[in-house]
Image (tube, rainbow over all chains, first blue to last red; front, side, top):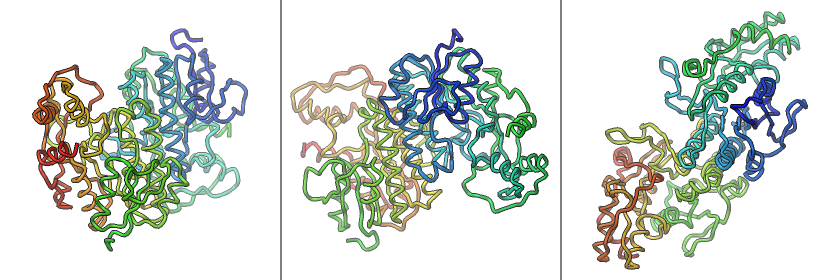
Length: 295
Length: 295
């Protein structure tokens, strides 16, 4: 157990990102417990089963922990768009419950938010002071959670750090992610469908690098702040398709673009590098090779 | 019944502002029904009893209406600060439920938000494009509602107008409003307590003027937009105390300022004046005289 960090509750620990973070923190010597609505598929993280929208369950679960690493919530943007009430409940009310419980028990909160809260970019890079203008239910609800934690910081002195994460990838992603869609199609001998011209780009950030960032932030002297945690490399959707297609000998087709996709943007993680020495521990090509090998 | 407007459901119709708006719209010839968690104290507005956080109740209540005027929610900033989970549930999830029901039934939504969503003002006047940075649970939850309606506009074509209202006053306010506090103290022969030096100011906007603004917006050709509805006159808390003290022969004392109060700001309603010909129908002094006479 890391003596400066104390015990850590990781919410969403049965999910893709929360699970990666919980396992990384446990393997690096931290005392970790999980909290999730559903049991973990592996038995390496002891997990409290509970619902973020149930204030009493959350209050009881947080008791005794020094740090809450809050990755729980609705992370599937398509699900949030289909059921915005669910996104509002889990991501806004659920995060409010986490903040209230942490304030009561004098725990600090590290909250996993998203680069998608930022306004469309005109020029330059997006730093943490860039304008906010989320336009879909997922990113609205994530910003709602940020703002409620900010209100609890003001009114109750809650210690909270907000991480705005890049589009995450890694082993164990949801089937509707573009990585899983491409790989599943390629492995099934199908054509890979690219929406639009494939020129839209993302700064894909590997789950391991996000876990390393979380560890850096919670192990350093604590400050309440907002930190972008977004890999610097820019990869177009077409480039991603080409990497998968090259591996499996697949072909690529172009289909109409989807209005649901957030616009491309370039997000700066200069603050994370400066304050926490964080940057991805491996380039995208290497992370992608590992992902495809494990797939 | 106004033929261009159709039938109107007013949420929060048993409350102070929603009640004023519902009665005004009914008296000006609109077909109005109320929706509230508690029955109205008077019988002039037929009311559906229901809970905004119950998606099915809201879906059923909105069916058949052309317009939803959404004033329901937690409007008491002190209550929201004490119970942020309640504010998140009712103001964010409840407003999401209203938006989903309106989109399903092809109704338009007029949403009562607040000037308190704006960032602290450095200079100039605050128009509708000013930066947003709510810092307490009430204003965070009101902006959360705005943003969820915006997401439903994007994803489902919901027609929505956001009114950002000035600090409202009028007959029937909550006992913890500064108007009621001062008047109750004066009528009880007590000293009026002013927080800080009383130099903080507000653009107090009378409930009748807010109701007139709602009527203007719903009776005009509809556009999805954000509109400040804030009276132009600036009144300091000390001036307010002096008006009440002069009426009752009270004295005034100064007590430490409260960190909960939002900072002073000057909000412009030029857009409401230009697009809807809205401005308060009477000056503050006259509205205040009416309020004190009815008190």
